[in-house]
Length: 325
Image (cartoon, rainbow, N blue to C red; front, side):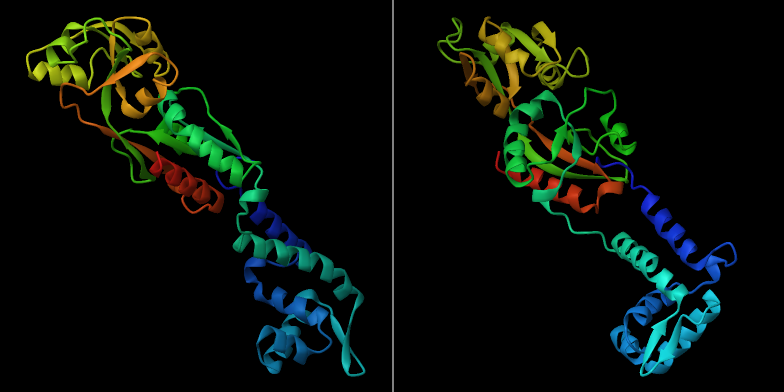
Protein backbone atom coordinates (compact mmCIF):
# COMPACT_ATOMS: atom_id res chain seq x y z
CA UNK A 1 0.00 0.00 0.00
CA UNK A 2 0.95 3.64 -0.26
CA UNK A 3 -0.40 6.77 1.38
CA UNK A 4 -3.02 7.65 -1.22
CA UNK A 5 -6.14 9.69 -0.57
CA UNK A 6 -8.37 7.64 1.72
CA UNK A 7 -10.53 5.21 -0.23
CA UNK A 8 -14.28 5.16 0.27
CA UNK A 9 -14.41 1.41 -0.41
CA UNK A 10 -14.55 0.30 3.26
CA UNK A 11 -17.53 2.59 3.91
CA UNK A 12 -19.25 1.42 0.72
CA UNK A 13 -18.74 -2.21 1.72
CA UNK A 14 -20.24 -1.57 5.16
CA UNK A 15 -23.28 0.16 3.66
CA UNK A 16 -23.79 -2.59 1.08
CA UNK A 17 -23.51 -5.19 3.83
CA UNK A 18 -26.17 -3.44 5.87
CA UNK A 19 -28.41 -3.21 2.82
CA UNK A 20 -28.03 -6.93 2.20
CA UNK A 21 -28.91 -7.74 5.81
CA UNK A 22 -32.07 -5.62 5.82
CA UNK A 23 -32.98 -6.29 2.17
CA UNK A 24 -32.84 -2.68 0.97
CA UNK A 25 -34.91 -3.33 -2.11
CA UNK A 26 -37.85 -2.75 0.21
CA UNK A 27 -36.43 -0.54 2.99
CA UNK A 28 -34.96 2.96 2.83
CA UNK A 29 -31.74 2.83 4.86
CA UNK A 30 -32.09 6.49 5.89
CA UNK A 31 -35.28 5.56 7.71
CA UNK A 32 -33.58 2.80 9.70
CA UNK A 33 -32.06 3.29 13.15
CA UNK A 34 -28.77 1.45 12.63
CA UNK A 35 -28.27 1.21 16.39
CA UNK A 36 -30.87 -1.55 16.17
CA UNK A 37 -28.27 -3.75 14.45
CA UNK A 38 -25.99 -3.53 17.47
CA UNK A 39 -28.90 -4.55 19.69
CA UNK A 40 -29.82 -7.35 17.30
CA UNK A 41 -26.32 -8.81 17.53
CA UNK A 42 -26.60 -9.15 21.31
CA UNK A 43 -30.15 -10.46 21.17
CA UNK A 44 -28.98 -13.22 18.83
CA UNK A 45 -26.00 -14.31 20.96
CA UNK A 46 -27.44 -13.89 24.47
CA UNK A 47 -29.87 -16.46 25.98
CA UNK A 48 -32.46 -13.89 27.11
CA UNK A 49 -33.54 -10.31 26.46
CA UNK A 50 -32.43 -9.45 30.00
CA UNK A 51 -28.92 -10.77 29.35
CA UNK A 52 -28.71 -8.80 26.11
CA UNK A 53 -29.92 -5.65 27.88
CA UNK A 54 -27.28 -6.09 30.59
CA UNK A 55 -24.52 -6.49 28.01
CA UNK A 56 -25.75 -3.38 26.18
CA UNK A 57 -26.12 -1.41 29.45
CA UNK A 58 -29.76 -0.65 28.75
CA UNK A 59 -32.98 -1.53 30.55
CA UNK A 60 -34.87 -4.76 29.83
CA UNK A 61 -38.00 -2.87 28.68
CA UNK A 62 -35.89 -0.82 26.26
CA UNK A 63 -34.35 -4.01 24.85
CA UNK A 64 -37.83 -5.52 24.47
CA UNK A 65 -39.04 -2.44 22.59
CA UNK A 66 -35.99 -2.67 20.33
CA UNK A 67 -36.79 -6.33 19.61
CA UNK A 68 -40.34 -5.36 18.63
CA UNK A 69 -38.97 -2.77 16.19
CA UNK A 70 -36.53 -5.31 14.75
CA UNK A 71 -39.37 -7.76 14.19
CA UNK A 72 -41.25 -5.13 12.21
CA UNK A 73 -38.12 -4.18 10.28
CA UNK A 74 -37.26 -7.74 9.27
CA UNK A 75 -40.90 -8.91 9.11
CA UNK A 76 -39.90 -11.96 11.13
CA UNK A 77 -40.23 -12.95 14.83
CA UNK A 78 -36.43 -13.39 14.98
CA UNK A 79 -36.56 -14.84 18.53
CA UNK A 80 -39.26 -17.11 19.95
CA UNK A 81 -39.66 -18.42 23.54
CA UNK A 82 -38.22 -21.83 24.31
CA UNK A 83 -38.52 -22.59 27.99
CA UNK A 84 -36.70 -19.82 29.87
CA UNK A 85 -34.60 -18.79 26.89
CA UNK A 86 -35.18 -17.51 23.36
CA UNK A 87 -34.58 -19.51 20.21
CA UNK A 88 -33.64 -17.80 16.92
CA UNK A 89 -35.82 -18.36 13.88
CA UNK A 90 -34.22 -19.61 10.65
CA UNK A 91 -34.16 -16.00 9.40
CA UNK A 92 -32.33 -14.89 12.55
CA UNK A 93 -29.78 -17.70 12.14
CA UNK A 94 -29.11 -16.48 8.58
CA UNK A 95 -28.58 -12.95 9.84
CA UNK A 96 -26.03 -13.57 12.58
CA UNK A 97 -22.92 -14.25 10.45
CA UNK A 98 -23.38 -11.34 7.97
CA UNK A 99 -24.44 -9.05 10.83
CA UNK A 100 -21.29 -9.71 12.85
CA UNK A 101 -19.08 -9.19 9.78
CA UNK A 102 -20.71 -5.87 8.97
CA UNK A 103 -20.49 -4.63 12.55
CA UNK A 104 -16.85 -5.71 12.76
CA UNK A 105 -16.03 -3.77 9.57
CA UNK A 106 -18.02 -0.78 10.81
CA UNK A 107 -16.12 -0.76 14.12
CA UNK A 108 -12.83 -1.02 12.21
CA UNK A 109 -13.91 1.84 9.96
CA UNK A 110 -14.68 4.11 12.91
CA UNK A 111 -11.83 2.91 15.14
CA UNK A 112 -8.96 1.84 12.84
CA UNK A 113 -6.39 -0.59 14.17
CA UNK A 114 -3.39 1.01 15.84
CA UNK A 115 -0.20 1.29 13.81
CA UNK A 116 2.38 -1.39 14.60
CA UNK A 117 5.75 -0.42 13.04
CA UNK A 118 7.17 -3.95 13.23
CA UNK A 119 4.27 -5.31 11.14
CA UNK A 120 3.74 -2.39 8.74
CA UNK A 121 4.30 -3.31 5.08
CA UNK A 122 3.76 -0.52 2.54
CA UNK A 123 5.59 1.94 0.28
CA UNK A 124 6.21 5.46 1.57
CA UNK A 125 6.98 8.20 -0.97
CA UNK A 126 9.51 10.79 0.17
CA UNK A 127 10.48 13.66 -2.12
CA UNK A 128 13.96 14.92 -1.27
CA UNK A 129 16.88 16.51 -3.12
CA UNK A 130 20.33 14.96 -3.19
CA UNK A 131 21.54 17.34 -0.44
CA UNK A 132 18.98 16.06 2.07
CA UNK A 133 19.46 12.52 0.75
CA UNK A 134 23.15 12.70 1.59
CA UNK A 135 22.98 14.31 5.03
CA UNK A 136 19.60 13.15 6.37
CA UNK A 137 18.54 9.99 4.58
CA UNK A 138 21.22 7.58 5.93
CA UNK A 139 20.37 8.25 9.60
CA UNK A 140 16.63 8.18 8.88
CA UNK A 141 16.81 4.90 6.95
CA UNK A 142 18.92 3.30 9.66
CA UNK A 143 16.29 4.11 12.30
CA UNK A 144 13.36 3.26 10.04
CA UNK A 145 14.71 -0.16 9.07
CA UNK A 146 15.56 -1.03 12.65
CA UNK A 147 12.00 -0.26 13.82
CA UNK A 148 9.84 -0.95 10.74
CA UNK A 149 11.85 -3.25 8.46
CA UNK A 150 9.07 -3.87 5.92
CA UNK A 151 8.37 -0.23 5.06
CA UNK A 152 9.75 0.67 1.64
CA UNK A 153 10.94 4.23 0.92
CA UNK A 154 10.42 5.45 -2.64
CA UNK A 155 12.20 8.65 -3.72
CA UNK A 156 10.72 9.88 -7.03
CA UNK A 157 12.64 11.79 -9.73
CA UNK A 158 12.95 15.56 -9.52
CA UNK A 159 9.79 17.47 -10.44
CA UNK A 160 9.07 21.14 -11.13
CA UNK A 161 6.67 21.61 -8.19
CA UNK A 162 7.04 19.08 -5.34
CA UNK A 163 4.44 20.90 -3.23
CA UNK A 164 1.83 20.36 -5.93
CA UNK A 165 2.86 16.69 -6.08
CA UNK A 166 2.21 16.58 -2.34
CA UNK A 167 -1.22 18.19 -2.76
CA UNK A 168 -2.18 15.75 -5.50
CA UNK A 169 -1.15 12.76 -3.36
CA UNK A 170 1.65 11.63 -5.66
CA UNK A 171 4.15 11.97 -2.79
CA UNK A 172 3.59 11.64 0.96
CA UNK A 173 6.31 13.80 2.49
CA UNK A 174 8.67 16.50 1.20
CA UNK A 175 11.94 17.83 2.60
CA UNK A 176 13.24 21.24 1.59
CA UNK A 177 12.95 24.99 2.02
CA UNK A 178 10.02 26.00 -0.21
CA UNK A 179 9.16 29.42 1.27
CA UNK A 180 5.54 30.23 2.02
CA UNK A 181 2.91 27.49 1.95
CA UNK A 182 -0.86 27.40 1.60
CA UNK A 183 -3.02 26.70 4.64
CA UNK A 184 -3.64 23.05 3.72
CA UNK A 185 0.02 22.17 4.40
CA UNK A 186 1.96 21.54 7.59
CA UNK A 187 5.69 22.01 8.15
CA UNK A 188 8.24 21.39 10.88
CA UNK A 189 11.94 22.25 10.91
CA UNK A 190 13.99 19.13 10.22
CA UNK A 191 17.40 20.75 10.84
CA UNK A 192 19.22 24.09 10.62
CA UNK A 193 22.19 24.56 8.30
CA UNK A 194 24.91 27.11 7.60
CA UNK A 195 27.34 27.65 4.72
CA UNK A 196 31.09 27.09 4.49
CA UNK A 197 33.64 27.22 1.69
CA UNK A 198 35.34 24.14 0.27
CA UNK A 199 38.54 23.81 -1.78
CA UNK A 200 41.01 21.09 -2.61
CA UNK A 201 43.07 19.94 0.35
CA UNK A 202 46.30 21.80 -0.47
CA UNK A 203 45.20 24.82 -2.46
CA UNK A 204 48.29 26.69 -3.76
CA UNK A 205 46.75 30.14 -3.27
CA UNK A 206 45.36 29.65 0.22
CA UNK A 207 48.42 28.79 2.29
CA UNK A 208 47.84 31.94 4.35
CA UNK A 209 44.09 31.37 4.74
CA UNK A 210 40.92 32.41 2.96
CA UNK A 211 40.18 36.13 2.81
CA UNK A 212 37.32 37.89 1.08
CA UNK A 213 39.73 39.13 -1.56
CA UNK A 214 40.93 35.61 -2.36
CA UNK A 215 37.36 34.28 -2.20
CA UNK A 216 36.35 36.70 -4.95
CA UNK A 217 39.47 36.10 -7.05
CA UNK A 218 39.08 32.31 -7.17
CA UNK A 219 36.96 30.63 -9.79
CA UNK A 220 33.73 29.29 -8.28
CA UNK A 221 31.64 26.18 -8.61
CA UNK A 222 27.96 27.05 -8.18
CA UNK A 223 25.15 24.64 -7.34
CA UNK A 224 21.79 25.79 -8.67
CA UNK A 225 18.78 23.47 -8.59
CA UNK A 226 16.62 26.06 -10.36
CA UNK A 227 19.07 26.95 -13.14
CA UNK A 228 19.06 30.66 -12.15
CA UNK A 229 22.36 32.45 -12.91
CA UNK A 230 22.78 34.17 -9.52
CA UNK A 231 22.16 33.44 -5.88
CA UNK A 232 22.52 34.65 -2.27
CA UNK A 233 26.33 34.75 -2.54
CA UNK A 234 26.15 37.02 -5.59
CA UNK A 235 23.60 39.28 -3.88
CA UNK A 236 25.80 39.60 -0.81
CA UNK A 237 28.89 40.36 -2.90
CA UNK A 238 26.95 42.91 -4.94
CA UNK A 239 26.16 44.83 -1.75
CA UNK A 240 29.94 45.28 -1.38
CA UNK A 241 30.43 46.18 -5.03
CA UNK A 242 32.03 42.81 -5.76
CA UNK A 243 31.40 40.02 -8.24
CA UNK A 244 32.70 36.48 -8.58
CA UNK A 245 33.49 34.37 -11.62
CA UNK A 246 31.58 31.10 -11.88
CA UNK A 247 33.56 28.48 -13.79
CA UNK A 248 31.13 25.59 -13.29
CA UNK A 249 27.39 25.70 -12.70
CA UNK A 250 25.62 22.41 -12.01
CA UNK A 251 22.44 21.12 -10.29
CA UNK A 252 24.02 18.30 -8.25
CA UNK A 253 25.20 18.64 -4.66
CA UNK A 254 27.26 15.44 -4.81
CA UNK A 255 29.22 16.16 -7.99
CA UNK A 256 30.21 19.70 -6.99
CA UNK A 257 32.64 18.94 -4.11
CA UNK A 258 34.22 16.11 -6.11
CA UNK A 259 34.87 18.55 -8.95
CA UNK A 260 36.47 21.02 -6.52
CA UNK A 261 38.77 18.34 -5.10
CA UNK A 262 40.43 17.98 -8.53
CA UNK A 263 40.73 21.70 -9.38
CA UNK A 264 41.74 25.05 -7.87
CA UNK A 265 38.13 26.25 -7.80
CA UNK A 266 36.15 27.07 -4.65
CA UNK A 267 32.65 26.00 -3.65
CA UNK A 268 30.17 27.43 -1.15
CA UNK A 269 28.42 24.48 0.41
CA UNK A 270 26.17 23.56 3.37
CA UNK A 271 28.41 22.56 6.26
CA UNK A 272 26.97 19.07 6.85
CA UNK A 273 27.47 18.16 3.21
CA UNK A 274 30.97 19.65 3.22
CA UNK A 275 31.90 17.57 6.27
CA UNK A 276 30.64 14.40 4.62
CA UNK A 277 32.31 15.18 1.28
CA UNK A 278 35.62 15.72 3.07
CA UNK A 279 35.45 12.04 4.10
CA UNK A 280 35.36 10.98 0.46
CA UNK A 281 37.84 13.35 -1.18
CA UNK A 282 40.85 15.53 -0.39
CA UNK A 283 38.99 18.68 0.61
CA UNK A 284 39.56 21.52 3.03
CA UNK A 285 36.69 23.32 4.74
CA UNK A 286 36.96 27.06 5.35
CA UNK A 287 34.89 29.59 7.26
CA UNK A 288 33.22 31.91 4.78
CA UNK A 289 34.79 35.39 4.69
CA UNK A 290 31.32 36.96 4.39
CA UNK A 291 28.20 36.71 6.55
CA UNK A 292 26.01 34.48 4.40
CA UNK A 293 22.74 33.70 6.17
CA UNK A 294 22.01 30.04 6.91
CA UNK A 295 18.79 28.20 6.18
CA UNK A 296 16.52 25.48 7.51
CA UNK A 297 15.36 22.27 5.89
CA UNK A 298 11.70 21.59 6.66
CA UNK A 299 9.54 18.51 6.70
CA UNK A 300 6.32 19.26 4.78
CA UNK A 301 3.08 17.28 4.48
CA UNK A 302 -0.51 17.81 3.42
CA UNK A 303 -3.52 18.05 5.70
CA UNK A 304 -5.04 14.85 4.28
CA UNK A 305 -2.30 12.79 5.99
CA UNK A 306 -1.94 14.91 9.12
CA UNK A 307 -3.82 12.51 11.42
CA UNK A 308 -2.96 9.21 9.71
CA UNK A 309 -1.22 7.06 12.39
CA UNK A 310 1.49 5.52 10.20
CA UNK A 311 2.31 8.85 8.58
CA UNK A 312 2.44 10.57 11.97
CA UNK A 313 4.84 7.88 13.24
CA UNK A 314 7.15 8.31 10.23
CA UNK A 315 7.12 12.11 10.61
CA UNK A 316 8.04 11.85 14.28
CA UNK A 317 10.88 9.48 13.46
CA UNK A 318 12.16 11.79 10.72
CA UNK A 319 12.08 14.81 13.03
CA UNK A 320 13.88 12.83 15.71
CA UNK A 321 16.64 11.90 13.24
CA UNK A 322 16.84 15.48 11.96
CA UNK A 323 17.33 16.75 15.50
CA UNK A 324 20.36 14.46 15.91
CA UNK A 325 22.19 15.72 12.82
